[in-house]
Image: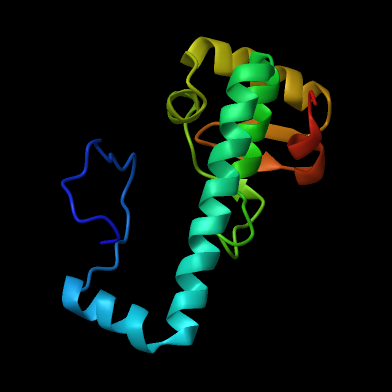
Length: 139
């Protein structure tokens, strides 16, 4: 809605997802007339940009275990994912897609993070025990 050009990349939902849709005219009217809407959009863009820059930094500077830790922590972002509980139903393959590593390497990283006391793994999900530890891991 913000760019007046075709999207140059694909967006793929890894699971069932709810998406809010509105007409472009309505979106632009809200931008022109609603301070609250503008604040919401600016806050979302700021948080997403910060998350993107942090994950890009992790990809370039950190080892795989730290990348998986930071990817897991990003799933619990308080603004972008409000109300997340400590357990998330996610597969190692999905984590691999998000972190840019193989499922097998995610498995090894999760064992390292579990041994360090940051999370526990169960079939079909992960429970985060120390979110701040995941955010700081390896950096």
